[in-house]
Length: 533
Image (cartoon, rainbow, N blue to C red; front, side, top):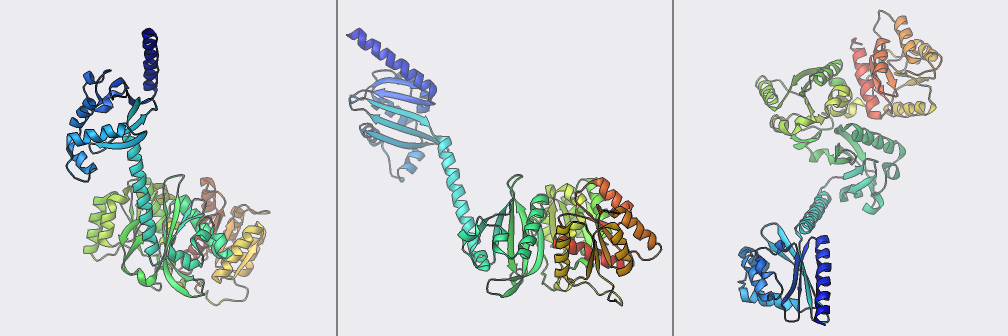
């Protein structure tokens, strides 16, 4: 009989050893008298318990006494509401818990270590205690708690802001809105979140919002503009609308904040940096045709990008200078301030944003931070987006001595859908325009209608855009030329090069947005009327 009992005990111990190898825990098994029967697994979790105690026959009281001696007194006090904990009281509490059918509790050791105890008393009086290191679990729970609290705080802060704020996903779906935005659109949060601009606004407004959102997600451009907003009750208010991208690649979001002009007089966000800016009212914004002569400072360590940005900005008539780091930026701005020279905008490589933010804020210069490649390839559009356009610049400046046949814009476009897009945008701006469906017709309409600017799609039938541009230049050789802007579907260098080689003055990419189109129209018309085209 004893041999059978011994054999059964050996098999049980063997099974427990296997379980201990699988579970990253220490396992203690004890009898009805609270004497140890088995101890195995990661017994080092039990801290300073000598191995001589972890043998069959040892009283659990002696093991608990050793555990208590290894505990941090500060931990014991914090766990017991700072009351004095004696050794005997602590051991008595632990022994009492061993006789409960099921007990689970955590015990903190040190500043960031947690031990979990799972105790079970079986119907036959035998008990099992599993001890494991739960530090990782508790740290995850703490991070989750802190993250949840942070989200709740951010939501409360957003709801307390007096102006509308919304966040859209990379697919332009609303994922967060504050109470002011809900009031602005006249809907509840549950009716907005999960929707797109086309679900909330009129088609023309929705297309503009979605077009701008896609550009911000794609390019990371931060846009600040003055707009006249209409609420659900029909009232209108001037506001500074700021749009910028947040998040990481693959998880970008667009944030839009609409601050009433009266509430934004002292300080705000320009680009993606928090910097102080000079007070700007809706009537004081820099019109795009006023960029000529403005001073733009390019900050980047990439010489190629700096040269490309400088060339592009010069084509707008802006004066540019280049610095490569925060120290040079501070020196430049200090010298400029001492000399009474105002810097109108800083175009900055986003990798230098953190180190250069302080200097920009100190000297109160508006900043936009962009990717290095953005500085080089899209400086024209960036400046067009950053410089505010006043409400008086929406209408084109009148052409001298117009006739009924003269038009402002000739659009050479064969795609019916794109023709509609151009028509809607140009009608909204109040321009007189005509549309040519092929290159031959474009040359004829240019000759007959004397447009102030030509938007030339390069893939036209009968005569492509390159040939049509060359033909127009031949017919108008020697005189002030009509600005011709190439419209490309793809940003291929060979197409851009051929546009300029054929005599075009600028290039824009499809899809066309109202902001993009207005920027190039105002810029090129101004150059033409100044006799520089």
